[in-house]
Length: 81
Image (cartoon, rainbow, N blue to C red; front, side, top):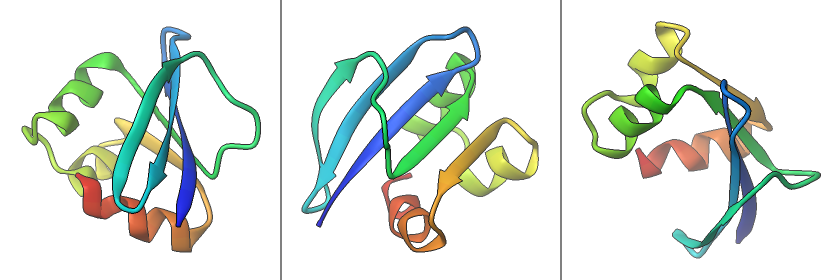
């Protein structure tokens, strides 16, 4: 199982990576066309999610993160936060 994930920060910064076998492979600078999952947020929220200072459901409920992708992909991805 491999999925492409795009992170778009509100300041225009973009990164992408591949999730393969429940591991992140090569975080790369810049965007990518046709991402399976897109995360749209700001730098502060992304930091809080990575450090587990904020949970994904709280971030989503507060409107601090927006997600694009199929429901199946999003359900799998939430396990990483």
